[in-house]
Length: 139
Image (tube, rainbow, N blue to C red; front, side, top):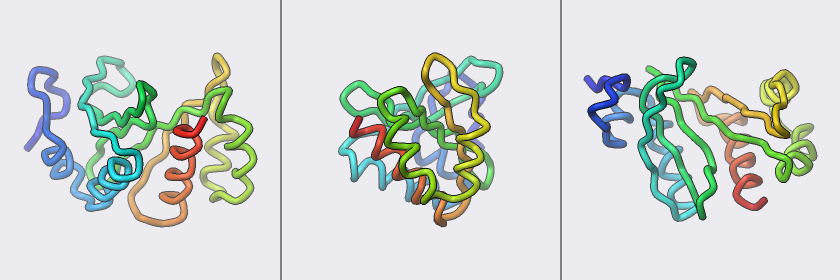
């Protein structure tokens, strides 16, 4: 079993997939890699709030999203900055109530909202997250 808190052992993506135990994680990673032609990087966070290994997807030096592995699901961090805000707020009425509430209740700081979105199935919220990432990439 992979210990995602051991900063001395960098896990491979396959090991994180085994830890999550949800095929959606691998599918999400594949979709991001194929859509944006980028590779994942494993990064260790020492932050007390989200300590451990996470998976980042970057394109042209910009982080598209960060994935935090959990057992049975994963959390996607998408930052909505000043550039993305108008486009995101335009699509929010079309998104799930869950995403709308999350956006509304996430404190804005330095012109950014850090949306932490839990995914466990390939429903409407999954598609909403992909739209947020697309807006982030295009801004």
